[in-house]
Length: 205
Length: 205
DNA sequence: TCGATTTTGGATTGTCAACTCCAAAAACTA
DNA sequence: TAGTTTTTGGAGTTGACAATCCAAAATCGA
Image (cartoon, rainbow over all chains, first blue to last red):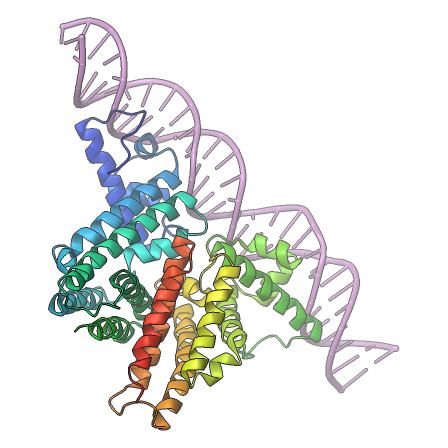
């Protein structure tokens, strides 16, 4: 997953330390943003020294890239197994409820871990942008798979476009998350998701 | 518009200088984000000295707040007169096209000026969060006004909820803008907006 | 016009953040 | 077990950035 390309061979202990650093960085950057998190903050949180951190990451940008990858994994991972079976209105509804519930528990802090990183990094960090695009792509693909299953089973009208519906649903989700984060209430998230689900429902035979 | 509360009376020249500073800051912060824009950058861009900037703004945070207000004004202002007459499917379609067109011209850089600020500031800056919430509120209200007009004219089914539709449309727009910014293509924005418009259309009598 | 206020220039300060360096300890490998 | 590589500690360097200060010039109000 993490490019185990050139350079360092990592000892078991090394891998652990590296993972601890990325996890700490991800936590802090989710709460305070990338720019709001200093390398020193990460050192404290992960309980490592400066030389350790720079032993595993050439520069902050490289750490950020690792954080992006981790968050993409975690977000998609956390939605399993719901995400891989979005092939009925009931499943979609359950998934929707889980997302809304999670945001309420988090008090709408941080919004979407991927979305926040995307907004902060998309224009400034080309490498991060590509990783984020891939993360969204996987997310979209998972949704698409469920909708396509419904379509292929003949539960949707022939003129329905499951791929486009999946993309629209992801957009409704992201927009809803952002507005909910600003308003500190679930309303916009529910409205965004429910509208998209109703739109999908309108294509059922 | 800008709280002309206590303290400074501003000379005509003073107002101009202040406005120049805010405009310059808004430009830079839209391109590079708030954290990515130093006060010194703003000084250069606005052609003012440090003492001038700190004469008009107690601290960076205060400047940021002024930028938030300006962007809210500008975004809503730029969408007039389309925004104030979203009371037909044709009007909605025209508005949609204008948004998509603008993003293409901008090459998807920056995304939504309000949305980007929101994502960066919502959790860290309570004052900014409130201003941003108000900006989104005004936006939502404008959309709502158009949909309500359609509803009140009896063009929508009685069970339609124009307020919720307006909120959902804004969510679809924001999510579409974010995904388009990451992917550098219009697809997600079009998918998000079109789905919401189709959803609205489904309530027409 | 004159006195008060606002506006401006630009050097300066203090803090903090990214990153480097050297040397020692620990962990692998042959 | 000896040699090599990886891992760790922590002080140090460098630069950037937010914010301050002291005057001088311009503007305004009576």
